[in-house]
Image 1 (cartoon, rainbow, N blue to C red):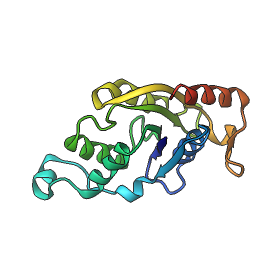
Image 2: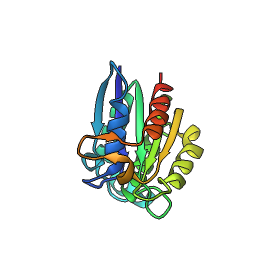
Image 3: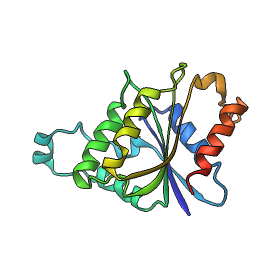
Amino acid sequence: MKVIAFGASNSKKSINKLMASYAANLIEGVQVELLDLNDFEVPLFSEDREAEIGQPQPAKDFLAKLESADAIVISFAEHNGSYTAAYKSLFDWCSRINQKVFQQKPAIFLSTSPGPGGAASVLASALNSAPFFGADVKGSLSIPSFYENFDVVNHELIDQSIKMQLVDTVESLF
């Protein structure tokens, strides 16, 4: 079984990429492939740009990665209450190629942030739109106050209550 995991951010120090990796690696007996959105950089989406350049290869490559997965783990970063620009543009390009971006794969949607909100607003948006884009969301969790609850040196959740919630969420994947 292969799990694709990624943080919906292009930050080189993405806490959401850390969270996606951590969560995916809680699943025993699977191969985890961690994607970096920087490897799928696309121009800002617009219909005019699409008419001009067609569909960019990085968007096609990203969709191929999702297609190769048995399951998907995403941790959403939040910028001003919404998706990061890098993720949103890649997602928009992908949805023009295949509206069912997530291709009916079972998925776990997560979010985290340094603050107490845990990027819950963007997670709610992602969950609300998931059925339209072919995501079979099996579980979701917002993790607040990342730096207070996650040990970045040892790569693990410190708060046992949150850790158990995450384990339960991840176990719902299969």
